[in-house]
Length: 382
Image (cartoon, rainbow, N blue to C red; front, side, top):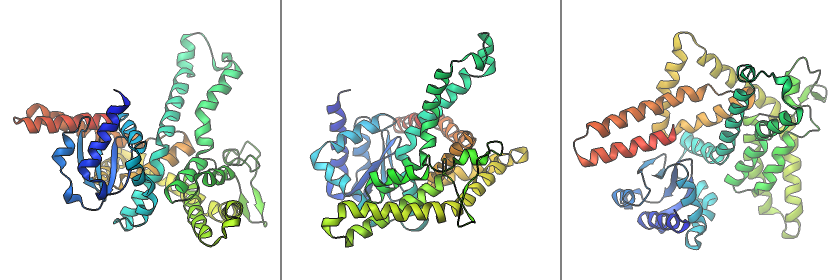
């Protein structure tokens, strides 16, 4: 399909929704998500007739157009390249602050906006880890009459670059996304995140290994300071607070000093706050979260899986399933394993089975079409 086709699809969607009716728009793995002023003005059937559209629904204050993986990225990029709709994207941060969502829904939506842009990197890294685990397993190497010692050191190093880089610098990615979402300069957030994992600090993974001999730096004799490799919560809070601080400073900083001194004070204040205050406190919260989820999954008789399987569909219905993204990212960053996704994926396959049954059993054409669209969408998500 040519790029012009994706641009046409995007323009048709915007036309039906109404450009004046759109406050902002973003995209996730499968959907364009519009914040709209008046949901009642939108003709759902007209949207669904547009090429490549697999369905629509309104949830968590957003009008969501399902396009499927791959297609949604191309349509989104085509929209951003169009001069008439680019202004909509540029008002995203202002619209987010005036969103109709409040309380827990607003918090969940914020988490989604921060984590969704980095999901492709986490997914790709997960695939690299899976391939590494298979190819370097004793069983596979044994079939070829080899062992891990027979793999050249340079090859192991190159593969480690593929599998370890994203998680080693995960705080930088999260801070970048948080600054971008809250209206700060993303490059400041990225550098701030890099400071959290600076090579000058004791590596968090090495400190956690009792055999490494690496100890944390004790500031003032009682504050342990380490790098925050794999620390999702610390990077998230530091990124949000840093972006808010930047906006406040820019409001009062003289124009002649803004270029240099605003980044100077943001980095200085948030580095001290992150390493000496927030980091040590949030580390315990994060460790506790991992422990609770792990113990729940390992509960006897599959009780933990039953509880998670019951909660997850309800979370999806309310838009709160994005909370799971933070938990899964934390598990991956700290343990390189995400058992939670397996339990959540069962819900997706159950939906796929239901939609397939609707498609096969429905007697009316609309029912078959609806079931087919839902089936394709669910399989894409699984």
